[in-house]
Length: 236
Length: 218
Image 1 (tube, chains in turn orange, purple):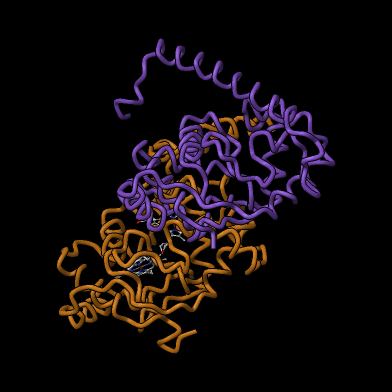
Image 2 (image 1 turned 90 degrees about the vertical axis):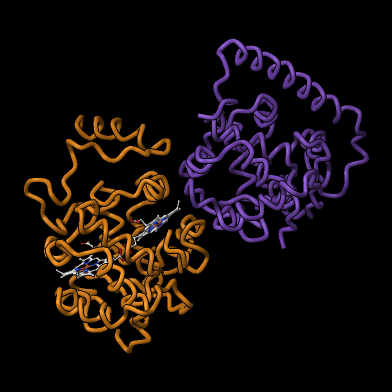
């Protein structure tokens, strides 16, 4: 009981105002730290997965996210804010609970997704809502002249094993769909994953991106941004 | 921290004293108006004259420091009055006023004002309003300020949780935003307005206010 109180008190200042500082280095348990376990089932994640999300409540709760991710959750074509439409519910839940656990840093979004701002129930609701969205719009694309090279790298480097032959990902295994995501966002995430700055990464993906050149990452992003949305590709 | 934020403690104290005096005068004004408004002049179903003194009979205050409350969602109005009553939202004027309204009267008042039509706002600076449009509809990416329209709606129409802003007085909007920023007002749901205004400069807040004044809510 006392420990809970202490934790709550310790969290108060971070929750009350914008916390630009990354989570405490001493408590950071992301990739690169000793004993890192990918997709560790934290109590919060277990709860979010157990709950049956509600579409209408999700739409309502998502109102607080639209200022950045936009009214239709399609994000910005400049990639500053990713598109969230059609991403798997399991992936949304993993990312949001990882962000709240301080594994994946996102200071821009932090005050809007902290436990003060959004309940676990709402995470489950938002996940159901977003995964159901079928809006298909023009996403942010790359130059388009490196698609073939990107496709080759996608196979060679083994991305295909997890993200699928058409970038459709895998709901059960919690591998995100990448097709038709904004180019600049894809590129930025690859860079973060490569250097270990996206703390919740799958270790095998970090290996897959090891010693990759910027040019090759650009080619991969060029290819991925031009893949169709998973529903357009006839994937579930 | 911008230069105009680093006010010395002395001038801060001074400003606070001026504010207290100002508030006192406003309060006296607020109390005296209903006394001179004859009760017989109250429109059918019109609310407590205590409110009309500042917000006017139809909820469209004409004094830029007092908010227009016409057309706000009833649930939102009720929450604010309750917050004033419990001092969760601190206001030298509304605090004492709210304690004079019984809980049972709150919902009726809220319903009445929610049904009034809001008058158009006054834009004082067109250039600033243009800058404000960008902030309101698209946010500020460099400082990760979300677009206001995400919550308050493209036309400033609002919902039961996010207040209608369209046509509001710029002076009132500016005061509220700086109150959030300085945590003088902290009854915003989930601390979202505090987080957002913390990322905004005074100039950006003013620009947003100007654009909001131009919105029609529909």
